[in-house]
Image (cartoon, rainbow, N blue to C red; front, side):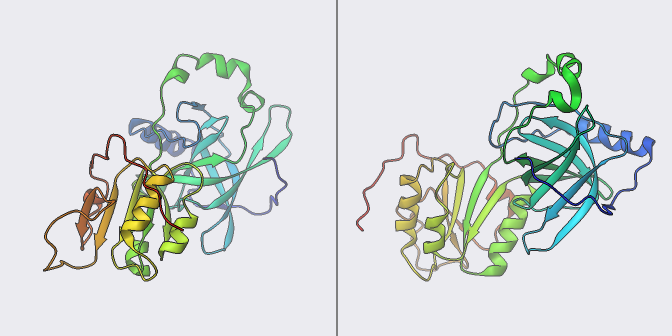
Length: 281
C-alpha cells in the first residue's frame, strides 16, 4: 500500500561510487538468487537508480532507521536492493519510489530474505504489502525490453516455523535459516505455535520435544491439519539414551543437538499425502 513517510537524513551504509555500484550490481547478478514469496513467477526487471532510494526500516526489536539503498530489480510485488548490512526477515519497511512523473510514492512491505554479496554489501529482498504498477517507475519501454527475461521462473522462499523453549537455541536456528534466505517464524511453546498456523502453510517445521505446554506429536498433527506438507522435524536438545530410534508420531525426521545448518536445510522427503487426523478439543 502507499503510505506517507519522513524523508530526512537517510544513512548511506555503502557510499558507492558509480563504478563500485555497477561492480556490486554485476556481482549480485553473477550469483543471482531470485526470491518472491507471494507470486513465485512474478518477475523483477533491472532498476538501477544511481543516487539511490530511501528505505525506512523497523527492526524486529522495535528500533527504526532510515537508509539510502541502491535498487537492483523492481517487480509489481517485490524489490531487491543493495544495503551495507544484514536485514532480518520480517523487518517492516517503507520504500520511497519516485515515479516517472516525479511523484514520490512510499510503498510498505517486509524483508523476506537477505544474502551477502561482497564486503559490507548485502542484497535484500523486500515483498510489498500490495502490488504496484511497475510501468509508473520504469516505463512501458523498459518493461517491453525485458519481455523475454520476464518469463524466467522465480524461486519460492522457504517458509519455516521453529518451535523451541530455549530462546538462545530458537534464535540461533532462526538466524541461521534467515541467513539462508528462509522466512522464519518462531514460538517458545505449543500454544503460540498453534496461533502461527494461519495463512500460507509452512514448508518446514521444527518442534522441540521438551515443550512445556503440550504434546509435541499433537502439535505436529495440528500442523498437518493446517496444511503443512513439508517435513516436520523433532528436535532433541541432547542425545536421549533410552530412545529406540523410532520417529515420534506425526514427525518425518529427528535431529539432536548441536543442530548443523546443513542438516536443518537438508532434503527430507515429506509424506506424499499426509493423513489429516481429527483432534479432540
